[in-house]
Length: 115
Image (cartoon, rainbow, N blue to C red; front, side, top):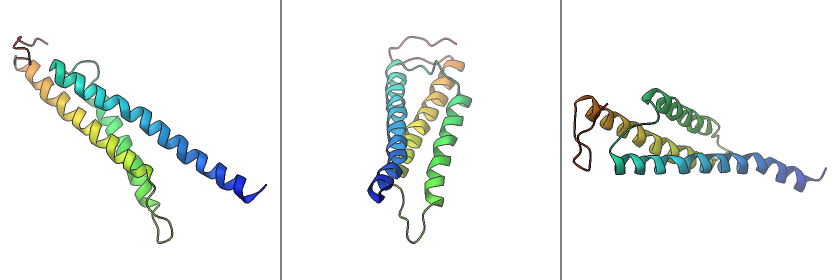
């Protein structure tokens, strides 16, 4: 096998990881916008979102652990960080809007929220 072929194959997993993070990462801003638009935190629980948040933090930490003097920080680290930030915002919105429902608050349209 040629060295060029091996270098190409070594970059394929990195590209696939970046594609996976990009695809998953697009869903979170859309969910955040929907939640801000509707003022409701329905569809998934805090526990579910917290598990995903921890997964992104673990992925980012794995990239930091791999940093050495000769190996720089992997560019996909920033996708993990961006996704973790978006999921963290989702957690805050779920908590905020979930509290409003429990306390009988009012939604963005002025309608009384019900549980």
